[in-house]
Image 1 (cartoon, rainbow, N blue to C red):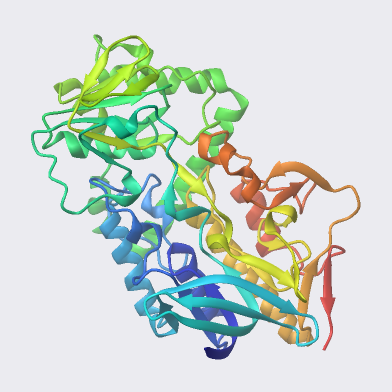
Image 2: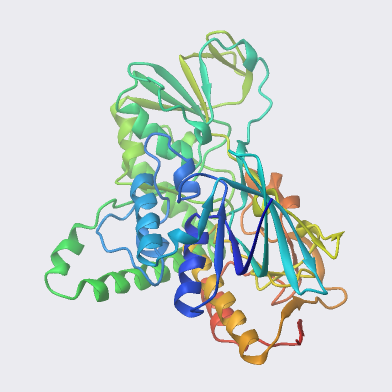
Length: 485
């Protein structure tokens, strides 16, 4: 048993956790911080996902930290580049020494008498129990399960003689050169995988139950290299970031206010990219834009792979797997060597942690989210989650800055704890992840905190509103209950 006492414990050393640690270092100097990371490396999602072509589906100018802007013309970066950016940020902010790797956090109990959390975990390699007490606990473990992805119950899958792989657990030794591949799915992962696989595979088939919306964007900003010679680089990239934030918000609002117009625009761009002979049945979704996350395609690489004949699209439901491939309900059989199940994520809050107050369980999924950062009835607990309808880091950054504001406010007034208290009748039935109706969101909605009917209990998914609410509004309000010394 190993015991430690610190001011703040951060769970997770990915994009959110490193960002939170850096903000604490910058804005609350002198705080003793411990970062508990289950994996043996920095990076979180970007260390876990290693499938071919893995990349961001948000532009790096808005996905980078506000205190360390992305300073390269690469618009959509590969996973390795993003991982390197997170690692370099951790080193520059001197937070690497605060990370304890290989620790799986099981739960945390708040003591009202001692006014602190006791966080319990396990160092998985050694089997040693780990216990840390802290004044403030911040969960930055994302929103999905690292141990398992989502895999539908495909009939006959056990009969398939080839390799069946989930992108979340891509084997490093897999040789797919000159192989026939079927990728099941049409979301961001499939759109990333297919052009990368098509470079070496004999042929790649995207098998989708229903189409998705795609938006082709430049993968490299050549014009930025020219502007770098004329204006200061830091000013340039901050300006690009601000412009892209505004553009993201505009596209989202246009999609919500005029879905039919946005649908025509997106489908029209795909038709132009694929050429006049394209079968557009495969690219006509039966839902409105941004009801599910938009799939970003850098330089139209997915469409180039389809036009070249190296990739194709089939829209059909699966009847059963066979020894040699997949038989569809139409009767057609797709014979293949490898099946990639790009079928989505399994949601999980706080890495599967459980929470209790004075020994009484307080499940997070039964509590309301306050400003989408604190959690009702759980003292001194921060939850850093990014956007699902914009760049993740835009929300993670302002959530971290809010928590630093809150901690400093409490220090200045000698307050020991803060606990959101929702008014009677505020609770609704919606999950805090209500911005999309994507399959993985709907399947896992009962895992997430709830949201209320009005602000600050309602999750806005709007950067402009959130930024004002988290960074400009006073810390104290009628819904926060503070405990004096």
